[in-house]
Each structure stands twice: as structure tokens, then as C-alpha cells.
Image (tube, rainbow, N blue to C red):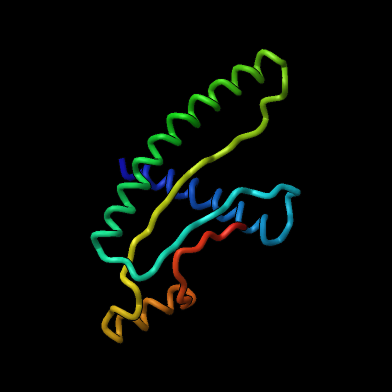
Amino acid sequence: DKQQMLGFLADNVGDHLSGVVSNVTGSGGVTHFDQAVFADELSLESVRVAHDFVASQWQRLLAEAVALLERRIEEDRLAGRPQDQRVRIGVYSYEDRMPDSMPKAQALAHTAKRPAAKTNTKSRKR
């Protein structure tokens, strides 16, 4: 259902952006978990392997997170704690050609979309 997919898109991007802005500005008094790993100089085959890895790890995280959250909801209810908080947990991956491997006109359009940064595998914690 396209309408439902657009709703998920808005909710996911909105929560991620709110968390990042809060982390950068220090507003809200909470540090939101936000990490990413990125790598350049991969082949298309290696990107496909990474994609499959992310999908399998997500399935594991999903199963464990749902069980944990359902258990915590019930424990909070039984303990009489206010149940006025929410959490969103997500994983994403994005694959694209490196600007250096694109035709020049395409590379210029690509770098205009995001800051050019030549890096290898790194973890970024915000």
C-alpha cells in the first residue's frame, strides 16, 4: 500500500532526523544512538555480499528487539510505571557508485548531493 509506505517513510526519516538534530544541538537532554559504517573501493559483488549481511543481521535484531520490547511493555504495565515513552529502532544500508568511477558529468551531480569525502571503512558515532 503506497499510502502506508509513505507514512513509514515520513515516520522513519522524521525520527532519524529529530535524533540527529538533537544530538548535534544538545537539545532534549538525551543522546540518541546513531552510528554508521561506510566503505569505498568495493566491487558490485562485495556490495551485494554486504547487503545480504545487513539483511540477515536485521532479521536477528528484529526478532530479539521485538521480544525485548514486548517483555518490557508487560513489565512496565505490571510495575505500574508510566508508559508514556516510545522507541524506534532501524537499520539502513545504501549502495551507490563512487564519484571517481562515474562519468564526469554524473560525478559532478553526485557530489552536489552530498559532501565529497574519500574514506575507507569507518564507524561514525554521533
